[in-house]
Image: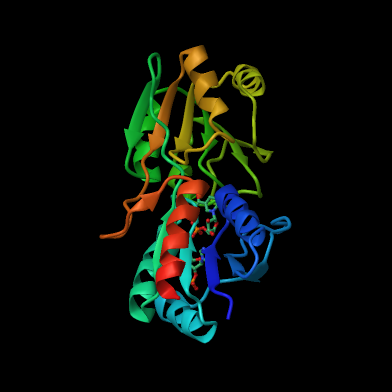
Length: 251
Ligand code: NAP
Protein backbone atom coordinates (compact mmCIF):
# COMPACT_ATOMS: atom_id res chain seq x y z
CA UNK A 1 0.00 0.00 0.00
CA UNK A 2 1.15 3.58 -0.69
CA UNK A 3 2.55 5.38 2.34
CA UNK A 4 0.18 8.05 3.63
CA UNK A 5 1.63 11.44 4.67
CA UNK A 6 -0.48 13.97 6.56
CA UNK A 7 0.62 17.59 6.08
CA UNK A 8 -0.69 20.04 8.65
CA UNK A 9 -0.89 23.07 6.39
CA UNK A 10 -1.97 26.66 6.04
CA UNK A 11 1.38 28.00 4.81
CA UNK A 12 3.25 28.50 1.53
CA UNK A 13 5.74 25.83 2.60
CA UNK A 14 2.94 23.30 3.13
CA UNK A 15 1.64 24.02 -0.36
CA UNK A 16 5.14 23.59 -1.86
CA UNK A 17 5.62 20.35 0.03
CA UNK A 18 2.29 18.94 -1.21
CA UNK A 19 3.28 19.84 -4.78
CA UNK A 20 6.70 18.19 -4.40
CA UNK A 21 5.22 15.00 -2.93
CA UNK A 22 2.42 14.87 -5.50
CA UNK A 23 5.07 14.73 -8.22
CA UNK A 24 6.30 11.42 -6.77
CA UNK A 25 4.40 8.28 -7.65
CA UNK A 26 3.13 5.95 -4.92
CA UNK A 27 2.58 8.41 -2.05
CA UNK A 28 -0.81 9.34 -0.67
CA UNK A 29 -0.84 12.94 0.62
CA UNK A 30 -3.50 14.66 2.68
CA UNK A 31 -3.18 18.34 3.57
CA UNK A 32 -5.18 19.45 6.60
CA UNK A 33 -6.39 23.06 6.86
CA UNK A 34 -7.96 24.70 9.89
CA UNK A 35 -10.60 26.35 7.71
CA UNK A 36 -9.85 29.94 8.74
CA UNK A 37 -9.38 31.31 5.21
CA UNK A 38 -12.47 31.43 2.99
CA UNK A 39 -10.64 30.81 -0.34
CA UNK A 40 -7.49 28.83 0.47
CA UNK A 41 -6.51 28.10 -3.16
CA UNK A 42 -5.87 24.81 -4.94
CA UNK A 43 -3.62 22.20 -3.34
CA UNK A 44 -2.07 19.04 -4.75
CA UNK A 45 -3.24 15.78 -3.20
CA UNK A 46 -6.21 15.28 -0.89
CA UNK A 47 -7.46 18.06 1.37
CA UNK A 48 -9.43 17.93 4.62
CA UNK A 49 -10.70 21.01 6.44
CA UNK A 50 -11.43 21.73 10.12
CA UNK A 51 -10.08 20.84 13.56
CA UNK A 52 -9.56 17.22 14.64
CA UNK A 53 -10.92 17.71 18.16
CA UNK A 54 -7.69 18.10 20.14
CA UNK A 55 -4.73 15.69 20.33
CA UNK A 56 -7.01 12.68 20.97
CA UNK A 57 -9.04 13.44 17.84
CA UNK A 58 -5.87 13.82 15.79
CA UNK A 59 -4.41 10.56 17.17
CA UNK A 60 -7.65 8.74 16.27
CA UNK A 61 -7.55 10.22 12.76
CA UNK A 62 -3.94 9.06 12.28
CA UNK A 63 -4.91 5.50 13.23
CA UNK A 64 -8.12 5.40 11.19
CA UNK A 65 -6.49 6.82 8.06
CA UNK A 66 -3.33 4.68 8.34
CA UNK A 67 -0.98 7.67 8.40
CA UNK A 68 2.73 6.72 8.13
CA UNK A 69 4.22 10.18 8.82
CA UNK A 70 2.98 13.62 9.85
CA UNK A 71 4.58 16.83 8.64
CA UNK A 72 3.68 19.84 10.74
CA UNK A 73 4.09 22.66 8.22
CA UNK A 74 1.84 25.09 10.08
CA UNK A 75 2.64 28.73 10.74
CA UNK A 76 5.32 29.34 13.43
CA UNK A 77 2.67 31.05 15.61
CA UNK A 78 0.10 28.21 15.36
CA UNK A 79 1.31 26.80 18.69
CA UNK A 80 -1.77 24.78 19.67
CA UNK A 81 -1.88 22.56 16.59
CA UNK A 82 1.90 22.07 16.88
CA UNK A 83 1.55 20.93 20.51
CA UNK A 84 -1.37 18.69 19.50
CA UNK A 85 0.66 17.16 16.67
CA UNK A 86 3.52 16.34 19.05
CA UNK A 87 1.15 14.69 21.56
CA UNK A 88 -0.94 12.84 18.96
CA UNK A 89 2.01 11.42 17.00
CA UNK A 90 3.60 10.22 20.26
CA UNK A 91 0.33 8.53 21.28
CA UNK A 92 -0.27 6.94 17.86
CA UNK A 93 3.46 6.11 17.40
CA UNK A 94 3.65 7.92 14.07
CA UNK A 95 6.82 9.82 13.09
CA UNK A 96 6.56 13.63 13.19
CA UNK A 97 8.61 16.07 11.12
CA UNK A 98 8.29 19.82 11.65
CA UNK A 99 8.87 22.27 8.81
CA UNK A 100 9.55 25.85 9.97
CA UNK A 101 10.94 28.63 7.84
CA UNK A 102 13.76 30.33 9.79
CA UNK A 103 12.92 33.48 11.72
CA UNK A 104 14.06 36.93 10.57
CA UNK A 105 17.36 38.32 11.82
CA UNK A 106 18.06 42.03 12.41
CA UNK A 107 20.85 43.62 10.35
CA UNK A 108 22.84 46.86 10.62
CA UNK A 109 20.51 49.85 10.84
CA UNK A 110 17.53 47.90 12.14
CA UNK A 111 15.80 49.31 15.24
CA UNK A 112 14.06 46.16 16.49
CA UNK A 113 12.27 45.78 19.82
CA UNK A 114 11.76 42.04 20.41
CA UNK A 115 8.79 41.21 22.69
CA UNK A 116 7.33 37.90 23.88
CA UNK A 117 3.63 38.49 23.10
CA UNK A 118 1.04 40.76 21.46
CA UNK A 119 0.28 42.19 24.92
CA UNK A 120 3.94 43.13 25.36
CA UNK A 121 3.93 44.68 21.88
CA UNK A 122 0.94 46.83 22.88
CA UNK A 123 2.71 47.91 26.07
CA UNK A 124 5.78 49.00 24.08
CA UNK A 125 3.88 51.16 21.56
CA UNK A 126 3.04 54.41 23.41
CA UNK A 127 6.77 55.16 23.82
CA UNK A 128 7.50 54.57 20.12
CA UNK A 129 5.04 56.83 18.31
CA UNK A 130 1.38 57.64 17.65
CA UNK A 131 0.95 56.06 14.18
CA UNK A 132 1.24 52.28 14.12
CA UNK A 133 1.35 49.84 11.22
CA UNK A 134 0.03 46.57 12.69
CA UNK A 135 0.74 43.43 10.64
CA UNK A 136 0.27 40.66 13.20
CA UNK A 137 -2.76 39.08 11.51
CA UNK A 138 -6.49 39.39 12.02
CA UNK A 139 -6.65 37.62 15.39
CA UNK A 140 -5.50 38.85 18.79
CA UNK A 141 -6.01 42.56 18.07
CA UNK A 142 -7.92 42.91 21.36
CA UNK A 143 -4.45 43.32 22.90
CA UNK A 144 -4.28 46.76 21.22
CA UNK A 145 -7.91 47.81 21.76
CA UNK A 146 -7.12 49.84 24.88
CA UNK A 147 -4.66 52.10 23.03
CA UNK A 148 -7.22 54.82 22.42
CA UNK A 149 -4.64 57.57 21.78
CA UNK A 150 -2.83 55.82 18.92
CA UNK A 151 -3.78 55.55 15.23
CA UNK A 152 -3.58 52.08 13.68
CA UNK A 153 -3.18 50.93 10.11
CA UNK A 154 -4.09 47.22 10.31
CA UNK A 155 -3.22 44.98 7.36
CA UNK A 156 -4.60 41.44 7.14
CA UNK A 157 -5.72 38.91 4.53
CA UNK A 158 -9.23 38.55 5.97
CA UNK A 159 -11.12 41.23 7.93
CA UNK A 160 -9.75 41.59 11.49
CA UNK A 161 -11.82 40.37 14.39
CA UNK A 162 -13.08 42.94 16.93
CA UNK A 163 -12.46 44.38 19.44
CA UNK A 164 -10.10 46.76 17.61
CA UNK A 165 -8.53 50.04 18.73
CA UNK A 166 -10.96 52.95 18.15
CA UNK A 167 -8.73 54.71 15.56
CA UNK A 168 -8.19 51.89 13.08
CA UNK A 169 -7.91 51.89 9.31
CA UNK A 170 -8.08 48.38 7.82
CA UNK A 171 -6.21 47.38 4.68
CA UNK A 172 -7.05 43.93 3.27
CA UNK A 173 -4.11 42.56 1.29
CA UNK A 174 -2.17 39.35 0.75
CA UNK A 175 1.59 39.29 0.16
CA UNK A 176 4.09 39.12 -1.38
CA UNK A 177 4.82 42.84 -1.04
CA UNK A 178 7.71 44.82 -2.56
CA UNK A 179 10.05 47.20 -0.71
CA UNK A 180 8.92 50.07 -2.99
CA UNK A 181 5.25 49.49 -2.19
CA UNK A 182 5.90 49.05 1.54
CA UNK A 183 7.98 52.24 1.63
CA UNK A 184 5.22 54.15 -0.17
CA UNK A 185 2.62 52.78 2.27
CA UNK A 186 4.67 53.74 5.36
CA UNK A 187 5.15 57.25 3.93
CA UNK A 188 1.53 57.69 2.84
CA UNK A 189 0.21 56.82 6.32
CA UNK A 190 3.08 58.65 8.07
CA UNK A 191 3.78 55.52 10.11
CA UNK A 192 5.98 55.92 13.22
CA UNK A 193 6.32 52.27 14.21
CA UNK A 194 5.74 48.83 12.66
CA UNK A 195 4.51 45.78 14.60
CA UNK A 196 5.08 42.29 13.22
CA UNK A 197 5.31 38.67 14.30
CA UNK A 198 8.62 36.97 13.53
CA UNK A 199 6.92 34.98 10.78
CA UNK A 200 10.05 34.64 8.65
CA UNK A 201 10.05 34.08 4.88
CA UNK A 202 10.42 36.37 1.92
CA UNK A 203 6.76 37.10 1.13
CA UNK A 204 6.30 39.65 3.91
CA UNK A 205 9.86 40.71 4.76
CA UNK A 206 9.86 43.84 2.54
CA UNK A 207 8.19 45.86 5.33
CA UNK A 208 11.29 45.29 7.49
CA UNK A 209 13.59 46.65 4.79
CA UNK A 210 11.27 49.62 4.24
CA UNK A 211 11.19 50.37 7.98
CA UNK A 212 15.00 50.19 8.16
CA UNK A 213 15.37 52.50 5.14
CA UNK A 214 13.06 55.03 6.80
CA UNK A 215 14.73 54.63 10.21
CA UNK A 216 11.51 53.38 11.86
CA UNK A 217 11.40 51.17 14.96
CA UNK A 218 9.91 47.68 14.60
CA UNK A 219 8.26 45.77 17.44
CA UNK A 220 8.92 42.09 16.69
CA UNK A 221 6.82 39.47 18.49
CA UNK A 222 9.04 36.45 19.11
CA UNK A 223 7.91 32.94 18.14
CA UNK A 224 6.40 30.60 20.70
CA UNK A 225 8.81 27.77 21.56
CA UNK A 226 8.46 24.35 19.92
CA UNK A 227 7.26 21.48 22.13
CA UNK A 228 10.03 19.74 24.07
CA UNK A 229 12.06 17.27 22.04
CA UNK A 230 10.80 18.64 18.71
CA UNK A 231 13.32 20.07 16.24
CA UNK A 232 12.42 21.96 13.11
CA UNK A 233 13.66 21.50 9.56
CA UNK A 234 14.17 24.78 7.69
CA UNK A 235 12.98 24.13 4.14
CA UNK A 236 11.24 21.75 1.77
CA UNK A 237 14.36 20.03 0.30
CA UNK A 238 15.73 19.20 3.77
CA UNK A 239 12.29 18.02 4.85
CA UNK A 240 11.92 15.76 1.79
CA UNK A 241 15.29 14.12 2.43
CA UNK A 242 14.35 13.39 6.05
CA UNK A 243 10.89 12.16 5.04
CA UNK A 244 12.48 9.66 2.63
CA UNK A 245 14.50 8.21 5.52
CA UNK A 246 11.45 8.05 7.78
CA UNK A 247 9.25 6.34 5.18
CA UNK A 248 12.03 3.87 4.28
CA UNK A 249 12.23 2.89 7.96
CA UNK A 250 8.45 2.51 8.19
CA UNK A 251 8.34 0.07 5.24
P1 NAP B 1 -3.68 27.13 16.51
O1 NAP B 1 -4.06 28.22 17.45
O2 NAP B 1 -2.38 26.46 16.69
O3 NAP B 1 -4.78 25.98 16.49
C1 NAP B 1 -6.09 26.13 17.04
C2 NAP B 1 -6.91 24.93 16.62
O4 NAP B 1 -7.22 25.01 15.22
C3 NAP B 1 -6.20 23.61 16.80
O5 NAP B 1 -6.32 23.14 18.11
C4 NAP B 1 -6.92 22.74 15.76
O6 NAP B 1 -8.19 22.34 16.24
C5 NAP B 1 -7.18 23.71 14.65
N1 NAP B 1 -6.13 23.70 13.62
C6 NAP B 1 -5.08 24.55 13.48
N2 NAP B 1 -4.37 24.25 12.38
C7 NAP B 1 -4.99 23.19 11.80
C8 NAP B 1 -4.74 22.43 10.62
N3 NAP B 1 -3.72 22.72 9.80
N4 NAP B 1 -5.59 21.41 10.34
C9 NAP B 1 -6.64 21.12 11.17
N5 NAP B 1 -6.92 21.80 12.29
C10 NAP B 1 -6.11 22.83 12.60
O7 NAP B 1 -3.79 27.67 15.00
P2 NAP B 1 -3.97 29.16 14.42
O8 NAP B 1 -2.84 30.01 14.89
O9 NAP B 1 -5.38 29.58 14.64
O10 NAP B 1 -3.74 28.86 12.88
C11 NAP B 1 -4.71 28.15 12.13
C12 NAP B 1 -4.14 27.81 10.76
O11 NAP B 1 -3.78 29.00 10.08
C13 NAP B 1 -2.89 26.93 10.83
O12 NAP B 1 -3.07 25.87 9.93
C14 NAP B 1 -1.74 27.84 10.43
O13 NAP B 1 -0.77 27.17 9.66
C15 NAP B 1 -2.44 28.93 9.63
N6 NAP B 1 -1.82 30.26 9.83
C16 NAP B 1 -1.68 30.79 11.08
C17 NAP B 1 -1.08 32.02 11.25
C18 NAP B 1 -0.83 32.62 12.64
O14 NAP B 1 -0.26 33.73 12.71
N7 NAP B 1 -1.20 31.94 13.71
C19 NAP B 1 -0.65 32.74 10.13
C20 NAP B 1 -0.82 32.18 8.84
C21 NAP B 1 -1.42 30.94 8.72
P3 NAP B 1 -8.43 20.89 16.95
O15 NAP B 1 -7.80 21.00 18.29
O16 NAP B 1 -9.91 20.75 16.96
O17 NAP B 1 -7.75 19.87 16.07
